[in-house]
Length: 304
Image 1: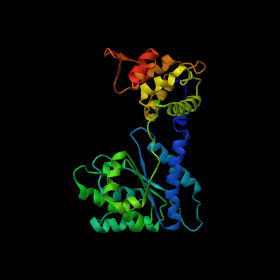
Image 2: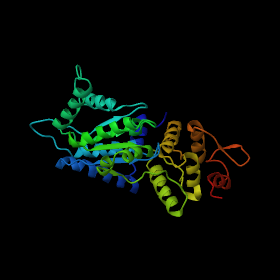
Image 3: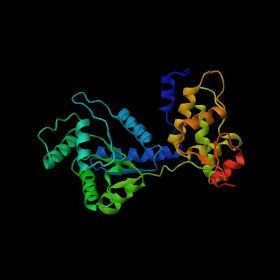
Image 4: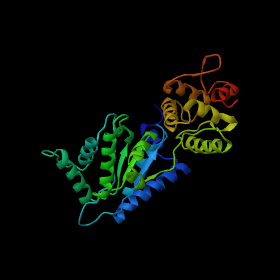
């Protein structure tokens, strides 16, 4: 490896503050600010997997931590972020939050455990609770379970006075459909939809993002936006920013000469290493988006 792991990690951790990203950050910031007046309003960040939701939330919580000022007479706690896994329950939320606060829960169960959760959140004046992958808290055929989850979120805001940011897929909308009160107390952030070239405006937006992203690499690279190469990027990634970062990460790990410009062939080789499923041409043959003829790429995207 020629480029140091530290340089690669620093590049991957540097956010690109594109317009949609900034709009969502402002919505989360507005939710946090409601904690300052003890009238918390929640926020929901909804998008497909890989659109940058979790990364955006990390940027938001970091910004909030930077804004909080230490107090000479007590500790100041920053936002809490917990991540749900498949099959997560409301009790899992409670236990994960208390774990983050280093609270010993021995001897607590059921209502006592829930009371401890509200009491500690309020006493420590937590400025924001972020629940990532929150769609895992929903059950497809159990509305009673889902209503209980909604009640926990509402009570966190009402009793503990902590705004709640829920980050997940569009499935989360079902939670608000079940509870109008929760819906009225939660702002839906602007959508972080996948990038695409479906319209001239969308294409320009995608090109601007990729241009800045590639120029930020710790090594010189071919322009992935000129000569309609952005179409190759869309086909290779599906407009998914996480997939794009995986490809670029692999490119950087493969660099053997930092003085040599990264080529389209380098992107093609990295794509083959990280792709989840092949892309086919009209004859059913697998193609590499970075090497195929442009007309083939356009047909595969449905633009020809």
